[in-house]
Length: 249
Image (cartoon, rainbow, N blue to C red; front, top):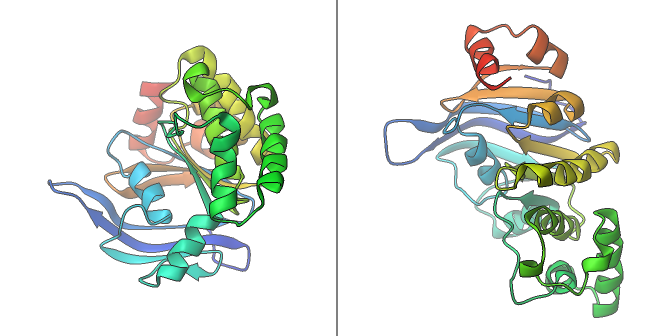
């Protein structure tokens, strides 16, 4: 594991999480994430990758273990939980946009309700974000009028509107048609280039190789292997990792 220090923005220690059934989703799982790092998590379905992301921002409760995000413990204190949810943006497989609101309204709403911005300031920042994800011309459109790739880029802009310190991506491209995946990955690459701390669960191995600082391979709720992209793809230590890579590359 990476050594803890002042540069660590996420510190997760000894996480255990079970659902009904024989397999633990997280089994004494520990990881730290440095500020500005792009950590990519890969592994077979059911290995605990998405569960970890959901535990990071309090969508799932851990059975035991500790999570600290930018010095804030994720504990029973409701104020801590709200603060972490404000500081941690999350993008899911499904876009979760409000269908009855325009693109601009989807991005502006939480800025006004949670951050207390005026309508004018929220609109101005939303338009900046739409330009950033290449969709400024879609501000007045509704989600049903957009392609899947465009909807996911709006979802990213909506998460960025809260000015998070960390962005979590849970299989953000897996629900997209192949030709739309690239446009979403391009936005994620841009975020990485801008220094955003990112934890990315993905099957896109080209993205993992190109953009990540570190890759974790998970199975049955545990870290099987971790390393730089070069180490992970070119000289994995464990046979289980090599078998996984043979299947997907």
